[in-house]
Image 1 (cartoon, helix red, strand yellow):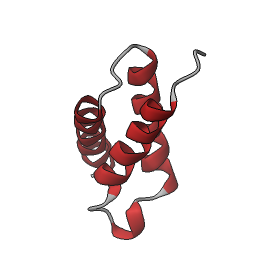
Image 2 (image 1 turned 180 degrees about the vertical axis):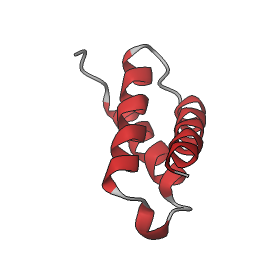
Image 3 (image 1 turned 90 degrees about the horizontal axis):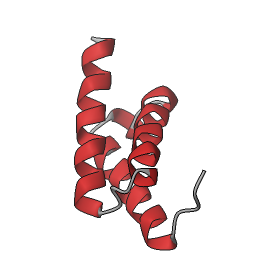
Amino acid sequence: MKALDDRTMANLDVALEEACRSLPHGGDHEIRREIAQKLLDCAVQGNKTLSGLTEVARVTLAEAIKKSA
């Protein structure tokens, strides 16, 4: 795996926290892990902006909630 720079790592963290903020207790481990993995995949492929990663996180959260319902 390619190393990610500090800014990208910070963007990943912010995007994950923003997406999970609406969940009770910040979301369970499985949902957070699923979102984090998707974010990491996108960052490695070149999507490193905060806005891009935040959108990916929101979409992934919506899909995860839909699957669990």
